[in-house]
Structure formats: structure tokens, C-alpha cells
Length: 112
Image (cartoon, rainbow, N blue to C red):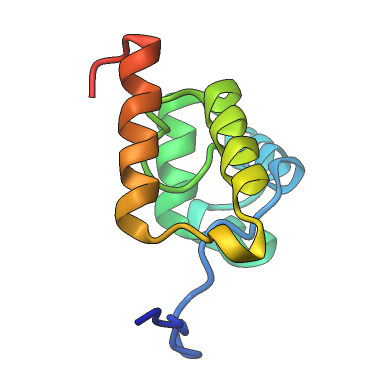
């Protein structure tokens, strides 16, 4: 039976800051115009994220969670294959989708 997860309303939204705001916040902190906590509040960036990005000087915004084992291109190929096969009469369940992903990774020779 499928479940519909609903995030709690009081939770802080994750990953909603923009790269431009982060770059500006880092520039302002480095110049000394504003402190880290004030910059985090002003630019709506979590302070922990701002501190981590300041120490690593990585301004790029990465996806949440671990990266895909298949890679972006292969993951898109697998999604397209599943969508082609999911006509109304032949809908796949979770076990069949996992088996498809397993065989797909086996064919590509990926470590999984």
C-alpha cells in the first residue's frame, strides 16, 4: 500500500537558498561588512551551510542526499525505460522496479 509522506509544517525548508545569494554572502563576510550569523539571516541561508561553504570555498549548490550510483545519464535512461513500460495495464511494483535497476546496473558493469 503506497504512503504519502507529508513534511511537517514547522520544519526548516532545506536547500531553498540560491547560489547568487550565497556568493554575495561569502563576499560580504570576507570583506568584513557583516558577520556570519547576520549574513545567514539577511540572505536566508542556514548559518551552518554558510560556515561550511566559507571554509571549503565551494559556492556550487549540490543536490540533497547521496549521489546516484548509476550517474545522471544512466539514471535518466532507466527512468525513460520505466516510463515507457508503465502503461496502465503493465504497472510495475516496487520489487519489479528494483529488479530492473539491478539488471540495468549489472549490464553496465557498475559496482552496487
